[in-house]
Image (tube, rainbow, N blue to C red; front, side):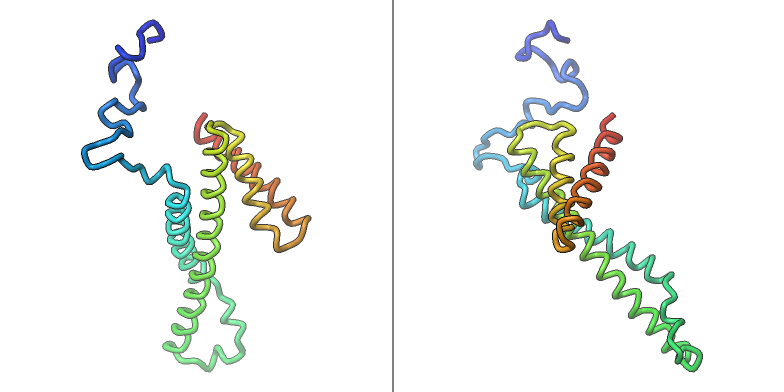
Amino acid sequence: INSVPPEKATAELRGPFQCPDAFKNTDTPFGPTFNPMENCVFKGALSFVLGGTMGGVMGGIFGSHNNDFMLNPRWEFMNTRQQMWLSWLQMRNQSRSMARNFGIVGLVYSGVECIVEKERASQDLYNPFLAGCASGAILGASGGPWAAATGCGGFAAFSVLIDWYMYH
């Protein structure tokens, strides 16, 4: 493979994960093609929506198993409809809370990682480290400097571990 010049390499020699020349980002009669996954705003918005969806589903699952409402002293005097309504309200609140939190985490991390990747112009394990540290510090900043530092370290370690596992 290394002895073949790149201009004469066919799709079989390039490997299964490289794009053939026909699909590269080139100008067309309608203007330049646009790949939305190269846009940091789009990646952040998509992560916000997908993270929020996942958080909403998880909040619905975990919220339905939460029994805090049984601590209510009026619980034994409620009929089934009132108990179901109280359970629904609790599950809805838990679902909204987790959807918001997962969406914000996805937005911050993917946005920061995209910016780091574009600025460094490389894809290696330093990107998730830098993006994880910055995201953890941003998300933990409201708790003070110790929370920001802990968030930086924890998020960076987790991001590097996940990236290393996914790509090795």
